[in-house]
Length: 330
Figure 1 (cartoon, rainbow, N blue to C red):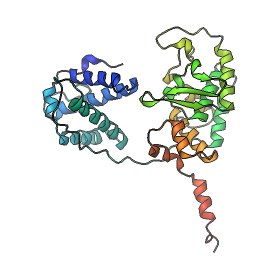
Figure 2 (figure 1 turned 90 degrees about the horizontal axis):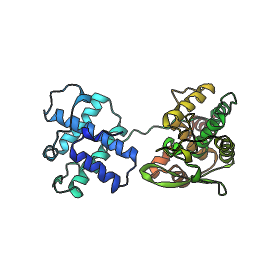
Figure 3 (figure 1 turned 180 degrees about the vertical axis):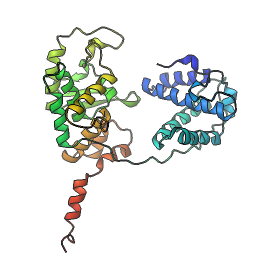
Figure 4 (figure 1 turned 30 degrees about the vertical axis):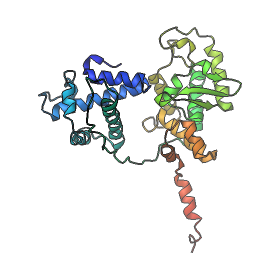
């Protein structure tokens, strides 16, 4: 929850603009607020406007647009350097903050009211740092089967629900936020598909295979006996419910997956809910011969370059290729 009283007026105006005009999701708004708070706390240090030594305790709600007008690109570069030296921020983290800063200054120069408008945009030539390319961590096919077996343990009183959750993650590659937001009405039981709202409030269709439909239907037999709460979370329409009879939370799903990973003999510190998304994508690419464009649409990636991380080959394929070299046995 954003505490708007801690923000200067120009940040709150930007957040309102991002919500109503840019149609950004609540998660994006939280990220914008966090990034800008961090940036302007640094600006107060950088411009010698505070004696506070504890970064988290710096107050920014007294900042005015006049301070913002003094910011140059060199000050933004200094902020990025500060993130690296003081917080050991990775390139992906810095790239996200640059994106926020760009959008913020574009707003001030183009769409802000006269009281907040800037003539010059200090972020106009701001470059994005080159991201580190890392292969995604994912479960092997055998480990995925072990995880599903662990999730189907009938000693767990919620095994129908937990098995359905794990099945959807491993077969569809959906995000955690997408899974917890599923409503029963989102599912087309005749066409074997459901609609989810992903990043940037973009809706897309996810197609369900037989394993997913079977798991969902078996869980719904249990779900139908639960009188879900009628609350702000729209829990009475939610597919997945917690033991409190309300829409399941991100944290609860993460706990469920951690518990199943441990039960399956897998390292819960190495794998996570998001790694199950990587697993689904990798298995579909390696075993299903899925076209990269189709995989992009399924995962809801805006850029094909994001999807291309799944085109990697595993070590066994590399070893096999080397062994098949015609010079191997000379």
